[in-house]
Length: 390
Image (cartoon, rainbow, N blue to C red; front, top):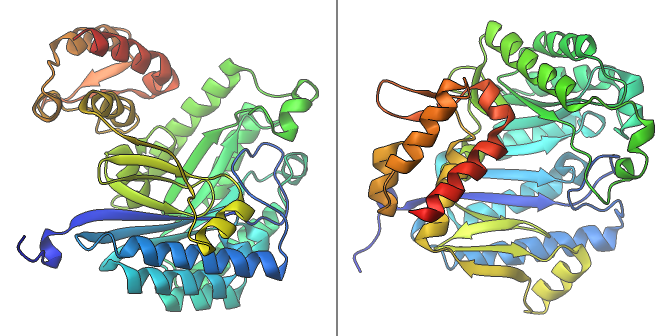
């Protein structure tokens, strides 16, 4: 095989799951722990670095163009640990000079010292979890910060030199009205972030919120829909482009890492419960920090749910993920890539177009409207049924 030069390498995203949090939010079903003992922190750091080195040796034909530290709360883990992990990634993989390198942060764990260190190490994007501007609601959902702290954290991030900042917001929170949600948007817009993610609250089984949801004055489905459509309108009026169901950005400021998921790019995940789609296989890491550390350091097995992805399944994923993003699906690309006819799907998309749920662009691509995004699960389900018949 001829030597692969940098220009011919396959793009690859890397996700690092940092599973440490100060406290657990009432709605959160992501894997995290609140134990921050030195033994566990050191064990995690050693294990994830070992795992990265092992994987890097198996990926010489890849060029890493995005790195994302999610959680958990990476900023709570600390700058030293994050810097060490990024250094190991650079030594183990070929990392692009202009790679997007993101870390998630909570307002209560952002400091000038942390930001200065991470900016100096090459991190160039921050995702700040604000969620809401109402302190009473923040307390109800278990967020360990106030909105004043969130504003201060954002200003610190700017002062440290970060020019690509995303904020996470949630709607449908306990006691939150449509007017209150709209006020949250307008207050956050004064911070002028490059990227905004707006997520509707989902009450997941196994979370504390699930147990007492009937006492929380949660928004019903119709109110959540109104909140969503209001966000689309307000953010558009402020110059933010909706490029995915829940994500909005200024021109040229999409989340390159997340877009990789939605467009079928390859990525490797490290840390407990991280997922991967790499070299034709999808797999997930065991959802337990102690097991992850023990198995990695002893040369054991941490992967689960490993499976090859056949073309027919990839075709279904293409529909599911591409209809999440504003650019939508390309019939010619679909037929060429999967050798399946798009005509039966076209008929169904036309039906959704007549209902105001989908649109067809001048170049033949199909995408959902904001109203279509609200019922995207139903639309995609109908399309997958039709796809199975072809």
